[in-house]
Image (tube, rainbow, N blue to C red; front, side):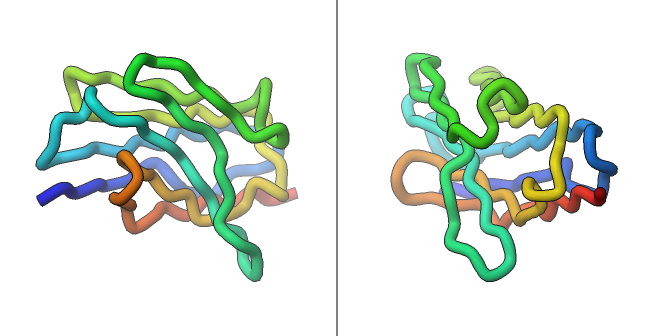
Length: 112
């Protein structure tokens, strides 16, 4: 059974940084794409960043230059380094594995 567990969320002032982690168990981590998504209150879930199995990355325009997705295949972990955080980055951040599996999310709150 595939399980995803996110961590690293919290409260931070605008301009600060956070690093999210997502550990995947129960599957061959390196064989699948990974992604980070977020959902703000009252809004639809949106893509933040993705990392293919070959390591290519893709970012939402709103986070380009501020966020970095990376993966450690040996540790079955994907990271999201978030710098220069803005209040509009406040959301629940979800990890996605392949096309099917989601974590339960971790809350990021950015105060102005």
